[in-house]
Length: 111
Image (cartoon, rainbow, N blue to C red; front, side):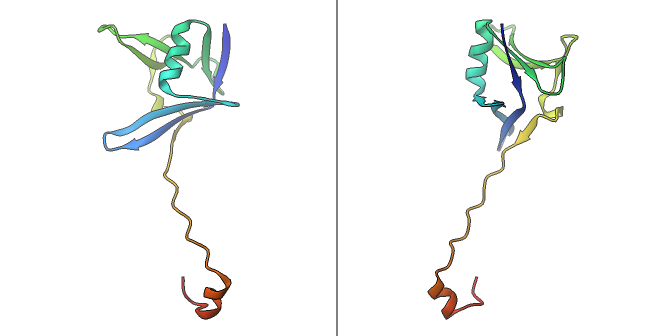
C-alpha cells in the first residue's frame, strides 16, 4: 500500500456553503473525484499530516454511492471543517494597473 500525506483540504465558497475542491500534499494535488478513484483502487492510503490516527477513506453509502470521509483511529467520522487542514480559497483581487511614468508626472496625486 502506498501512503500519502495530506497537508491541506482546500475548499471553494459557493452560495450553498463551502465545498471541498481539492486535496493537497507535498508535491501533489488531487480533486475529490481523483481521490475517490485512488482510494477505491485499494492501493493508496491517505493520512492527514500532524496526526497519526486521522485518515481519508472512501465510504460506501446505503444507496450504493461513494463518499469521502475523514475518520479517526476508532473509525468515527470527523468533520473536515473542524480540522486545521481545512482551508478556504479566497479569490484574488486584481492588482491595479501600474501607472506609467508619464501619467505619474502629469498627475502625481491620482490613484
